[in-house]
Figure 1 (cartoon, rainbow, N blue to C red):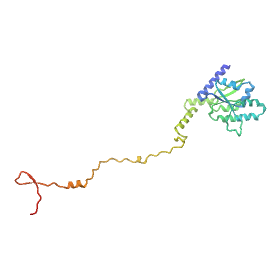
Figure 2 (cartoon, one colour):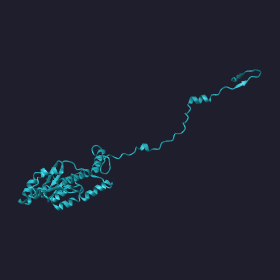
Figure 3 (cartoon, rainbow, N blue to C red):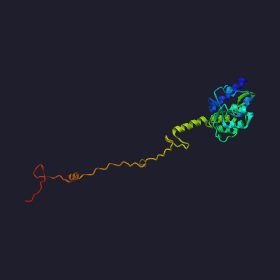
Figure 4 (cartoon, rainbow, N blue to C red):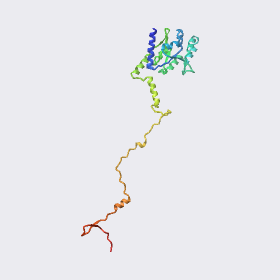
Length: 255
């Protein structure tokens, strides 16, 4: 029976590792009800939890869970002493503590981003935690610790991711990191090194002008000297009677 329970726990842990990226050390969020059940059943949480989950663990709780045990009196004094040995994680109710059940739910939010295992005997808490995808639940039954099988909500989300209908949390994280590297904000705008929005660059107005068509080259203007040369006339040649050669006309002079 113990070997069968260990195999089932290994299968469930592999499901959360592969689909929701749980990694060691596993963070186990524990409340007073689980500690009380462990005392009654003589279970050593620190010793048996790592063996059952087959890996390194970090046992933790919240300030609200400790305050709740203090208000309940001496009947839960032993559970309080056990719970005090674990790490206390910061919650948003330090000044105004709330019931431990509400505090645990607030620590997980809608997506369990910190990858908490939750160890509790509170039935109402477990029912609400099953509505959050990717939340491993631990409880004590028949003097043994049991890791509950994945909830229907977790199975449905994995199926949607595999069919491409949803983006996995790991893919969302990689997209956010890629946007930060490229300097793209939430609105898709690129940002500079200091996080400021880059101004939109406008085209150069000179580049928008239409190019002039190349015409025929204009002939160069004639200078004054060239004009005078063109006006000069060569002397006319006249034929001399009785001679075989032409002579240039001489200018006439008055006697």
